[in-house]
Amino acid sequence: MEFYHLRSFVVVAETKNLTQAAKRLCSTPQAISAHIKALEQELETALFIGSAKGMTLTEKGQLLLIKAQNTLDSAVDMVNLAADNQDELIGQFNLGLNQSIQALKCIALIDNLSENCQGISLELSLSSTGKIIQEIQENQMDGGYIYGEVPEGFTAIEIKNENITTIAPKDFDIEKILTQQDLAKLPWITMEQYCPFDKVLKQKLGINIHAKVQSDHDQSRLELVKNGLGLSFLELSCAKREQLTGEIQIIPQLNFFMPLSFVVLTKRLNDPIVKAIVQEINILWDIAL
Image (cartoon, rainbow, N blue to C red; front, side, top):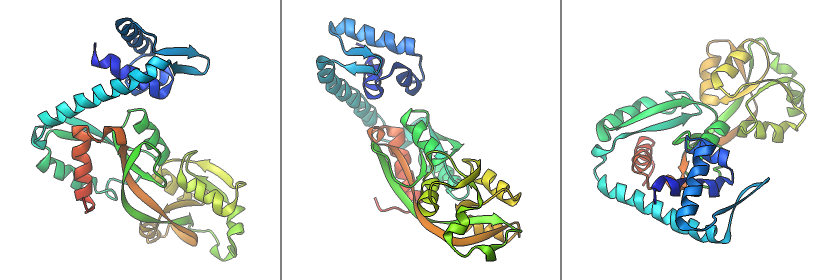
């Protein structure tokens, strides 16, 4: 019995879909299907029932899923035991960023890894909360920073409670804003479908917002505001720096706080590389262990 057969079995059981399982495992649906068939032949039992709704576990498949997961967990534990010394760890961690490299102390994290975990390298990916969550779930990213609620199946380290404000173009007449509803009538540069900022915006101003442009990247939204295309949300600390240049204005009526967290999949907490990064994140942000 091959471990990659068991891994394919577990992921198909989780996703109920060969294509989604293949994406998570960086493989193809045909290869994943072959793994399942090989495992079914070896165990002499059907594991799934295929239908238009996807792959559903058989009764025996449900029982064997628990055994398969335990077997994979035991393999991870064995790797952990063999890698007690972090200096011996070798691997890469893909880290999703929803703020700038400077704001998230990435240089300090790289320096700390160079000193404490020399074999671990970082791949930094500038993204947005919704995309980071999705890519972690699909195993395309190992961990990252997100705003707002932590989805089921994730473990989070809350870094801080970020103050969020509204920014407007430099020639915008702030004196015309008397109520929050005055803001609802104006053009907005929104984020993306799964962004918690957009949820707050709709909660405060209603669902009929004039969303003129959509961008999931802070810097691009900032540039669009500077060019007079609308209003947008931005971290207050960043907005204050930009206001000093005279290219934007701050509108405080909608200010709110949003938790910023570092997250990884709970089921990967025993992965030696993930465990080492979680420890370094705690140290970086001075979080009590």
